[in-house]
Length: 527
Image (tube, rainbow, N blue to C red; front, side):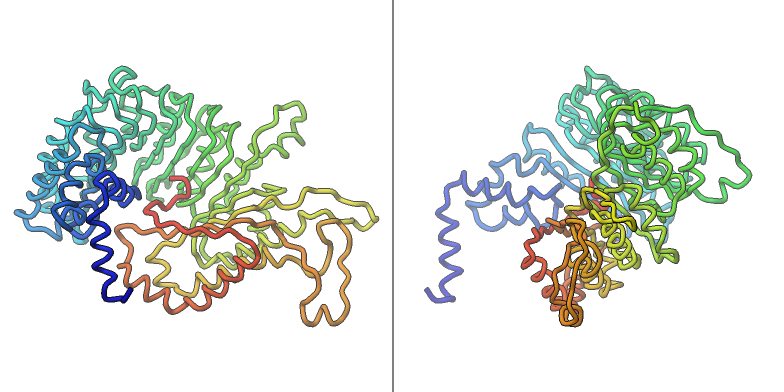
């Protein structure tokens, strides 16, 4: 068949596809996340291909149950802002009576003005009123507004509503300060995840015993908000995942004295993410937390986590080897299997990385890391740490038995904007990942015996090598958010390094590694 006839054949094939098959194809095209109401993206573009496709799209209400709206005043006139309501109404009508998942984000302009806030209020109230009329259909709800000190009220009343499908509720910015939130296990029987500032949570009435996931995000709060955090956590006995992200102006802490809040045990908490910038806050918060079921730690948003004394003390308290050495009769805890490191910056002291990883000896199974200037040092010190975990003989000829490093997977997260500014970081990081595969060509092997090389093997590197870690998988996450550059710019940057990257990835496959790739708007590994 000639190439010129291929498009016609493809169009003819799709035109003959049964509506049920087309509907499944349409649903597959939007499964990545909430759809944006853009004419060139699914599902809007699907409804404009042909009459048949439009009919199928309009008869598939599941296609219209997920929506993400971003309202930016600087891109719109006052008349343009009011056009969002007909668009939302269209989406609500097409989703019929199915449960709704939506995110509304109101962004401030670069040069923030009071006029921008009033513009947001102009469009905010009609949109919220339309959604409140459909509250019995809410499933996953996120409403985010700018956070400013002086603003017109964005009062949101979520009390006494019947929310039979609601599972996740997220509010941030000014709207989180103006919310009236009162829910019970009868009005919201399926609510398990909430994202709110600590003070808003403290002043809300929620079915706390139902909550399994909690996101506490505060932007420039009072330093004493750590007591609000602990108070809220004391209500969430069944919590399994906890994200704490806060940014405090250092000037607010000068001259203040803090006491450690009363100790609190979260018996079911398995995932903890810390995004706290100040050591002063962590050294008060972390000693109050006891998490016996902890298996996953993320320090995304927590600079210099590897050198934090508070984090080191917290990890040592929760690692089973440390517990069994100091408290032999204490019950064995689960191992911390996943650790994610955020942006560390350039490290002057490489021993900090080694000390950090040795706290997890024999090591974690899964490491998440973000493209950063510290990647080279990070991986080199991880290599040194893994190397000493293999069985070896000491100076007296006695065999030191260990199980070897447990590391199986590395997750590499790349923020598109950062990668465009530093295109050389990706190939450098991939090159250093080969250290964990090549291992040590001198010293001791996995069986504890010394490796023996002749001169030719030493010179050409053909001797046997012992992998530093038994890596099985490398997962690459491309983070794309509203601040990310255009896909075209990203592709141009990748084009500069594509040959190097292609060669390294091909080498990984040859070694038997499983490679996977993901596009996401989530920075944290388990967000």
